[in-house]
Amino acid sequence: MTPAIDDKLPREPRPRSSIAGLTLVELMVAITIGLIILTAVIRLFTTSRATYTLEEGLARVQESGRFAVEFLAQDIRMAGYAGCSANLTSSQVGNLVASATSVTTFNPDGIAGYKHTCTSSCTGALSEWSPNPSSDYFPSGSIMPVSGTDILVIQRADTLSTHLTGNSETVSNSNIQIINTTSLADSVQAGDIMMISDCKGADIFKATSVSSGSGKITIAHAAGNTNNDLTHYYGNDAEVMKLVSRIYFVGRRNNDSSNPPALYRKELGSGGVLDTQELVEGVEMLKLSYGEDTDVTRDGVPNIYRTSPSAVSSWPRVLTVRIGLLVRTSTTVDQENDTRTYDLAGITAAAGPYNDKYRRRAFNSTVQVRNHFQ
Image (cartoon, rainbow, N blue to C red; front, side):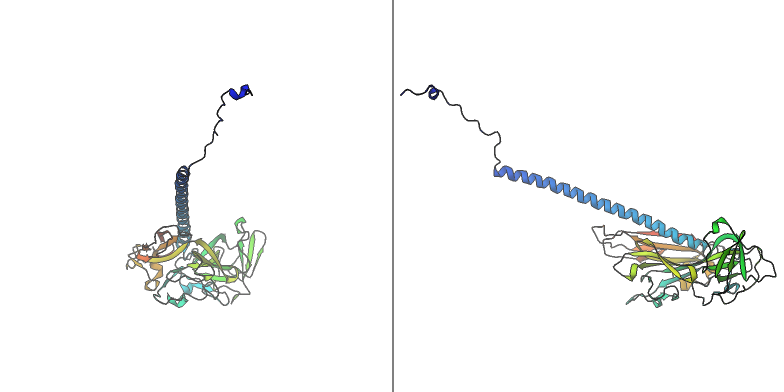
């Protein structure tokens, strides 16, 4: 049988597949290279993230420190302000508020400081500060100061830029009429603790009712006061202001040690009640020292700084206050523990070491007390 012609032709080789398989060695090399690249990318991301977190934390620390210093500085500068009645004594300030407390009693010095003196087994009781702060400042159940930190109480008058009107020497100021201005809208309300001052003295009273008339506002001070008449006659040149009482301290929300520390301020509100405000989070330490002019001639220059308020011989001679604040980041951002100590308000190693991974910065500022003897 003759074979077919096709059978006599040479067969063409079948084409091999264009995609060849990987050997085990090639696969392992590829995986290794991929892992190296992935590790580098992850490490770069982690480093960038840590750097960003650190820089963001430091920026917030810087911002918080500036805000905290400014809050304190504004009140310290104006401490003791009482209108034209400069350098009053306690006998020149009448207090008509019924059941007056430390908060509603004007301190002519304008400043009261308290230093924590407990060194072991401290519980945070007010008796651990020297001198002992009034319980009026920290009633039961309120936010309490953190052990190791100082407390500052500022009192002053807040001007309303208005004076009495329509009074005569035959009037006992049983009701007070003040010149109405657009800036007074909602500035004076019933229950506010007010201060009236001329160049002879001042009085503190509670406004029991406030009514507006033609060009004037009438403030009555009957109920809630021990007397409807003020201690002396005030003419049309007398200035009417609001009493400001503020307590600055470092505390923790709900007094819970697991919450971050913050700078707090308790402020006299309507009816003599203290309003508690969290001003700046992250403030961990507040230290204060007081520059006193002890020269007989009163040259207007502080020549000693008292770190203990109890050591101040005369508060009207305290011309400057050094503020020391230690502010930390809201989260742990460092790789190593913080073993540093910090100088605050001229006090060496006033805080630290903390041995944790928070980043901290110290803020120090010296503020002049404008209403003390210069």
